[in-house]
Amino acid sequence: MIVNYDIDRIDKLLLDFYNSTGVTIDLLKVDFSKVSHTKYEFNEYCKCIQESETGKNRCRISELELLEKCRKTKKEQMHICHAGLVDIAVPIIYEDEIS
Image (cartoon, rainbow, N blue to C red; front, side):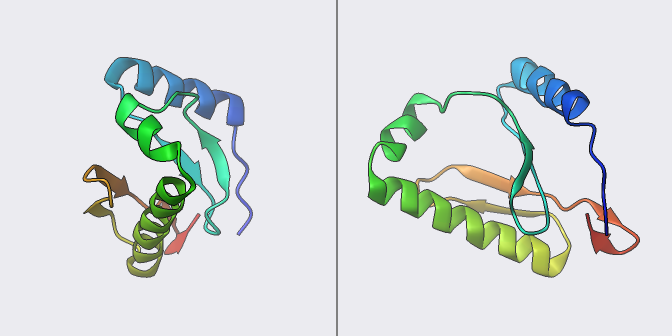
């Protein structure tokens, strides 16, 4: 399925949402490559974890596990990441396919 995104509008929306709530959002393709993401800096807790290769790898593994479960079930998923934070994935479904 070919999906055309208005990246400028999406970027503005994500930034406005982040500025209003402090919550970050990434929009990913079905292969988990980024379409758009909030331009932000990690909070201090995440910065500490991301400073080490081990921390970065554990974050990526935790994120991929969540995304795979979301893709498989085609339903929203929530989990507590390896560092104790809540992480949420929500699929965008169009004609019964994740887009």
